[in-house]
Image (cartoon, rainbow, N blue to C red; front, side):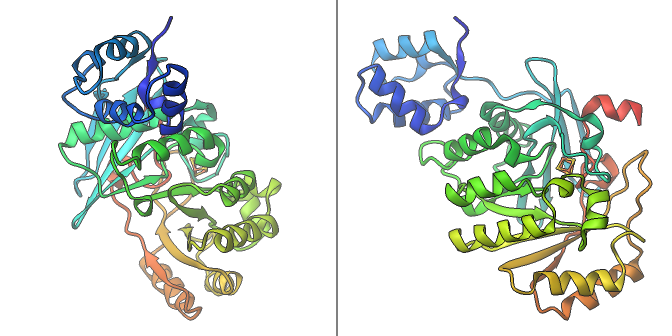
Length: 346
Ligand code: SF4
């Protein structure tokens, strides 16, 4: 029998196991604490547990070691991009972004992506497969081991559409927020969606332990259809009400990500329209100047067009943040992650 990775079991799944094994419920907390103890490589070392349970756990489960990246790149601004090879030889990238007192880990949720956004390097891979919760958690543990530092924030904005892999993302968040695991605050994670409405509806009904961001990038369906093919299936008339319902049901503000592409969506009328479009929503807007991707024709905004866009958008009185891109020089910024294979071909 193939042993199971402990980080694929949510706290609820451990409790079910304990019931099945006729163990007291509190054992699940002890098991989670042992799995997250860096000094415990296997359950034989988990001395808080009775010997017979340790043996049983060791037969059924394994505690994976952090992954060692096959490639590590560090940019001028100290952003670190790590390339990890998974058990089936799939490659994924994760990024650690230091800024002031923060250290943000940007995590991948799929190998490749099916969403086909025209400005994104990951889209060129297509979707290979979903990541498991253990593979998402492996990125966190491996970056911690690599840097010797805990993150202050987690963003699920790497390779893949997180809401298309909702079960694994949910399980990952349930695990890391558990007091005996990382005791991670739900306010310190952001899930970014390109507008996968079934996923937004699902987390409206059963909220995730994370905040939500919508990657919008266009103020009309004609342009959004071109930039983000998902819009043909879920146009603005569907995605924006879904965001509003989510916000009303959870009481949470949603971040709107707007990638500025020169000559495409950075005109003054785009800024004015963006303000009008979102004026009745509980949102804040993050403006992200585009990072060039080799082989793609898009360009970042000029300083002048960026300043004019922000000036116009500020008239809407919506909270606006300008995100300065980090890790550009190593292809680690937004939309630049593509794993090893694509990098060789573009
Ligand atoms: S931007 Fe995000 S959703 Fe769109 S193709 Fe890239 S990884 Fe997928």
